[in-house]
Amino acid sequence: MTVRPMKTKWASCSTSGRLTFDEALIGMPHRLQDYVIVHELLHFRVPNHGKLWKSLMRAHLGEHELIETELKRLGKT
Image 1 (spheres, rainbow, N blue to C red):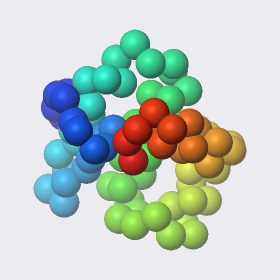
Image 2 (cartoon, helix red, strand yellow; image 1 turned 90 degrees about the vertical axis):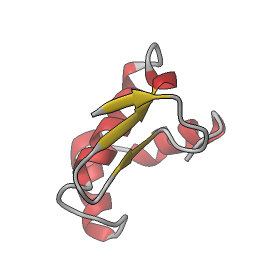
Image 3 (cartoon, rainbow, N blue to C red; image 1 turned 90 degrees about the horizontal axis):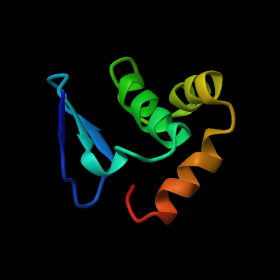
Image 4 (cartoon, rainbow, N blue to C red; image 1 turned 120 degrees about the vertical axis):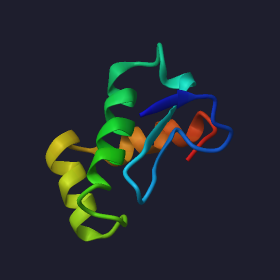
């Protein structure tokens, strides 16, 4: 796992299993941090954002779409 400045994303998960998180997440509200962490961890099981991934996000975070919208408003995907 790496924490570093990222220009366009909040985090990424490589095919080799390496997680990278944007250092801007430090100090952000926990609900936003939780979303990004759960989002990336789910990619270990589901590599895309299809129905299964969305179902698992909902199971872990409820209305995850609202948090996703908030993160996008902050300028990254």
